[in-house]
Structures are given as C-alpha cells and as structure tokens.
Image (cartoon, rainbow, N blue to C red; front, top):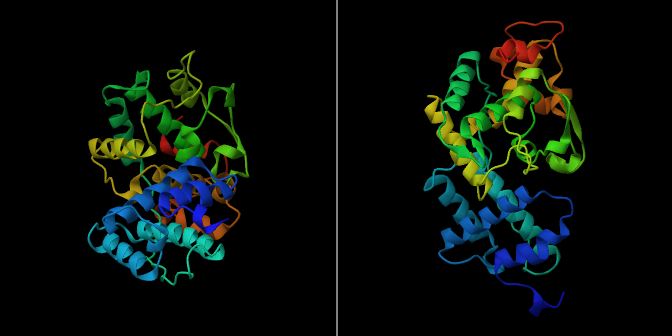
Length: 300
C-alpha cells in the first residue's frame, strides 16, 4: 500500500487496514480492540496514532492501567496483546519502523471458583425480583431464562446473546460455529423442560433473537450483570461475571461423573482443569450418571 494512503490515526488504521484482513473474527473481538485503542488514546491525551505504537508509550499506558486505573493484571495483559498484535502487523507491513518489545504481564495464578447452591439461589432470586424490561419482555423473565440456559449448557455469553429462535427445534438448541468462540465448532444441546419453559416466556412473533435487548453495546450487558450480582449480595468483580456460570456448569458436571472438557469443547484437558474446575466442588463427590448438572444445581 502506498505510504500516503496508510491512515495515521490508529482507530482508522485498525478499521481500514488491520481488521479487514482478519477473516472470520467476531464483532465482539473487534469491539474489544476498539475499546483498547480508545483507552490508549485517553491515556495519551489525544487520539492514538501509528507513531504511538512504540515501547515507551505502550508501557506507560499499561502501567497507568495497572497502577492508576487499578485494572486486573489479566485485563491489562489482554490489552497489551491487542496493541502488540496491531503493532506486529504494522511492523511487518513497514507501516511503523520496528517491532515492539513490551514484556508480558504475568498475573498470579488463581484457582477457578464457581457458584455454590446457596449463591445460585440468591442469584436466581435476584433475577426474579429484577424490575423493568429488557427489550420487549420483563427483565425478570429475561434474566431467569439467560441463567437457566447458561447453567444447563455451559455456553459462553457471546454465543447466548446471538441465539435466534430458528436455532431451537423442540428441546434441541443448535448453536452454529460462527456464533461460538473460534468460529469453527458448532454445538448442540438438549434442553430440559424447565429451561424451555423459561425461554418460551421470551418468545415474540416479531423478534428473531432469543435474548433480544435494547442495549447499545455489550458493555451495557456487563454493567447490568454487575448490578444484578450486587442485588443478589454477591461479589461483582470480573471473575464472578457470566464466565462464572460456565465454571459452575463445568465443576458440577465433573463432580457428577461427567467430562467437562468434552462438554465445554476444549481440545486440552489442562485448560479445563486450570481455568474451569473448582476443586471444592469436583472433589466433593462423584455420581455415575444422570442429569447431574440440573440435579446438583436444583434446576430440574
């Protein structure tokens, strides 16, 4: 590309040069990149440019995120990865003079934590008591359906929010690969009657999305979820956001004798063990078969 046609503004560069070459990536991933670029610009005091992709300014930004903004190390490390991915591409294309040398942030390892039965009782009760509406349905019905499907499938939030009614045929919920992380592996779930009952309360003839919202961005969803956790008297830090539902599914399934690695679609057992299985649950006892997740969580 002719140098004069390369955008100097980093967000323009991302939108016009970098992202169009990343085929098959999800809109949510693009949104996270744009958020990181915006925060980088805020730290600089002006919109970020290609020239700002240098060791000194990127390291200063990351230090600010850690020390001033008090963001978690895992969060800041992901922001580092995004800026370095753009910088590596730009350096290979000779749009910036050199590759960056910014050390990885190595957060202390944490043991996976999931909800216990008493926590889920409080969370589901908070769902029932949520006032107002989401989209065209009562917020209480929306949140209950979301939690039942999440807890009984272990599916990720992004995939759940992209579900459409034509993906549900009787009790079978089919999630296409394009809606799931990695965009390569489709998944099929058989939902129990109680989950179907809650889903039917969301059905509207003129709306295709199952979990339809009027939120302008995914950030609004996470803000509302934090408020839901607080109403339930539960911690609302990052580790207890919806990913905790996925860990809960995995841990109770494993405790009941199931294979959480297969159920979550992981190719590596190590990922499941180190990031999803709460040993306080998995080591509590084993069952051989049956509807272990629903029974142990009291979800039917």
